[in-house]
Structures are given as structure tokens and as C-alpha cells.
Length: 120
Ligand code: SF4
Image 1 (spheres, helix red, strand yellow):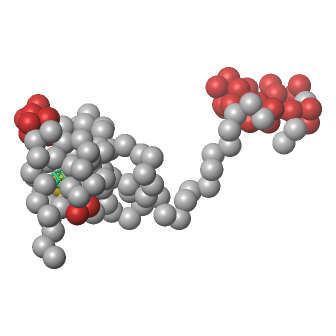
Image 2 (cartoon, helix red, strand yellow; image 1 turned 180 degrees about the horizontal axis):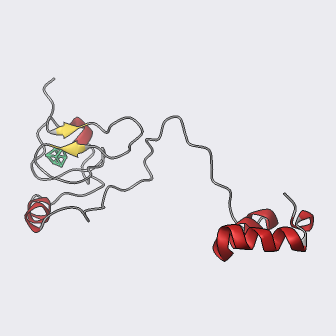
């Protein structure tokens, strides 16, 4: 939609229906001032995401995570979470997996001091 196509009446109607924030976002999008959302990728797993949201963890969970020195990006390419026997792969549509030892989101390329290689 082009911003010139929005009449004053349309503007007022939209303002009353969606509120100023919605109209502002809509107008920005119409002006090209806001990046349109990309369509969802078929394969959501990418290397440019983080698994650091620990907001739902208890103090004890955080202590274990920190004590085992979990990092989102392993310093050792031979010790990656997705190569660890304790890693639980991400569910479909998710990027972060889980771990049977450390609570919270786990990056497949992360690591910790409890790394245990998957059996060959
Ligand atoms: Fe990753 Fe450590 Fe859990 Fe293994 S034990 S999956 S290396 S966080």
C-alpha cells in the first residue's frame, strides 16, 4: 500500500481501530521505513542465533550452568554440544536444544566442561 493511498478518513478510522502504534507501524511499512518480516525459513537452524535466555531458570539451575562453564560457542571444535552424548536435539522449528545435565536452552555449537562424546 502506498502512503498516498491512505485518505484522511482512512487514517482516522485506522487510528480508532488499531491505536496509534498500529497505524504508526503500518505507515512506516507503507513508507518503506520498516523492514518487512522475512517469511519463515524452512530450516530454522542457523549459526547466528543464541541460546542464552536463562530467565526461566532457578538460582540452582544457573549455578550448575555456570559451574560447568556452559558457553554458546565452543572454543574447541571437537567438543560441540551436538556431538555430546548428553545433548538433546532441538525440537522441530526450534534452534536451541537441551541437555540432560544443564537446564535451559543449549546451542548445538556450545559446550561445557561435562562434554562427553557420543559413542562412535
Ligand atoms: Fe553441551 Fe555440556 Fe550438555 Fe554436553 S553436557 S550437551 S557439552 S552443555
